[in-house]
Image (cartoon, rainbow, N blue to C red):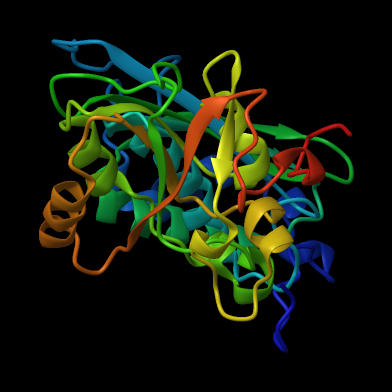
Length: 315
């Protein structure tokens, strides 16, 4: 996670810090850094609330932070940190077949944070927002000693006729994942990833996709939320799609994969499904990795997920 270069976010000289600027100058600068991706008030920064157009269907909302020392360190470029903040929220939308409509950002800063680091952070956020068509419509800035954190709240709508949730899988359904797993920290994938928005929208249009979620804490942990009551996930170890030099435990527990895991109805013609996927997404692999079976059923050649612990906050 720490390459040869250093992107230290705290200024060595007080004159280069946000403390030397103050809140008013900082907010004015943020407007400039975001540029056209932040609309004029009241549709963007500058009023007590942003005004958004009415939605014809159900709205989706999610929130995720990036925190210095937890989600990034001085080895990650500030532009990449800003992009990661938006992309990890977009991954949540992708998991439900959604598309983004607007975002707000809450920033918590030590007064020693370097203004140049912050400019790069916002320019990275703005570049990602333009790429994915997400207006940044507001936010807040607060001071806290020893803290550098940003929390983004993302709004969205269903990209198609339905929203896919984590519930709905049944016994006998097969388990699939996009992309490859493990090694996210060592490879830099944890901030270089592309959220699976198009893939999630496509999957949501497939009636045989019963349930779906994104992988942020590791497959071994996240899959519990998809597993129907009274059942367990029987995963085939050899089927797990992994990065090079990544073992089974890392593929199951490293976290920050930002891929999609979904349940496909047992009656589905799996070969036909895989062919349709390959036509739609020839550069994104999809892999069948297991099946939901009765909790007390032993399936030879499958993994016991109780032996693997994914990332768990506060533990």
